[in-house]
Image (cartoon, rainbow, N blue to C red; front, side):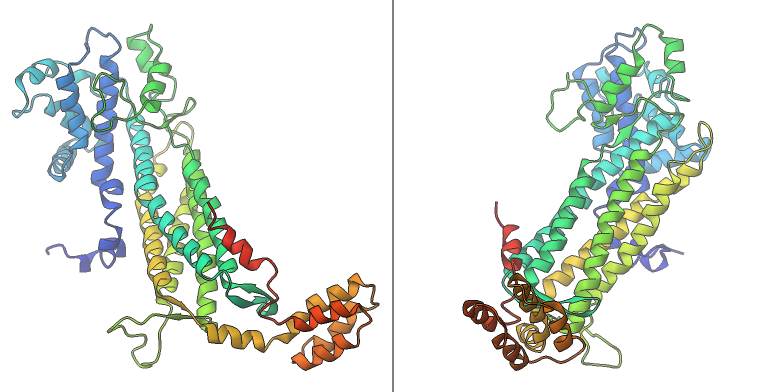
Length: 478
């Protein structure tokens, strides 16, 4: 049977395939293989800079060729690696053999071929598979974070920030415990989420992505056995922390991976940074779930309307419906993402003795968790683009909630020492429908200065906003 998206087990590769296409070159099996090639080549070039007789310094032509192997890695080349793996039954060894084959490829420049063809045994020299894998995973997460996750999150945050500025002065009735409460502004309530999201995004961006290259159990045993006079820990640190090659960089620079060095490990890097990263991402997703539920509620209350899309249907039987499906889809996909993220953050730091293989199969699903996350972010952006404020409904609810002014009245009464201020307002308002006239009678009978009476009499639910508008507007300041 020919492959079709309709046959995909995961909707990320079926129904939603196009929406997660930006992740595919990074988090796919091909993306993983490409990073392994990058790590192997980077290590090999580093060896050539140590003055070893068996691995002499490389010419710029050879370096350029080697760098091209991972920078220009193709789907067909990934298939070649997978073909080798059918024989080796070992994915990292297949990468090693493929790189060695490229040292003798027919299409090579003759001088480069002559330089490299006898150096194949230094590919994967003294490395254990996990030295290659853990650095490759870190590179994948780095690329996914910087190229996909953070840009999408930035778009969500900036869109919400724009709404917070647009609606900074629009009064809205609050609801605590689902009941009418002190008025706020629409923009201020959105601003609350913007600030939370910015802080969470900054935490995600600041997490150091760790990698180790220290051999079979973390002690550089093989390296020291072969070359006891080399400071292998410093070599590994230079490779891991050195700047990764960028197009146009001088080829005589030391090549690195642009990660953070993990000095202590067993056979595997402990994955504590991954747990921290996944926890940070899931925490950010929780904030967005909170937002999805609030905006869903505001749409249900009629505070927001949704722009109609030509041809779209809200219900198969109820033609009038305009459902908040984008926020519902976002909430569902954020939940799926977090289920995976939380499992990985709890499981990956646990490994029996110097290693077991349970991390390997779990870690292959990082891209799935990221995929559901960015699927949710896109749904959020779509939903946010449809929102329209319903000024009439907001005003109607505020005008029907004069009881919320019990708070400022009793607070002013307390200021002037009126006995039983809170209790008086409680008796008048709790569980009752309160009118403007009821409050007017109460205020006029108070034993407080006349100017304070005038100030209270001038209050309306839509003007009792405190600093809500200015707090929202502050977000828009440089």
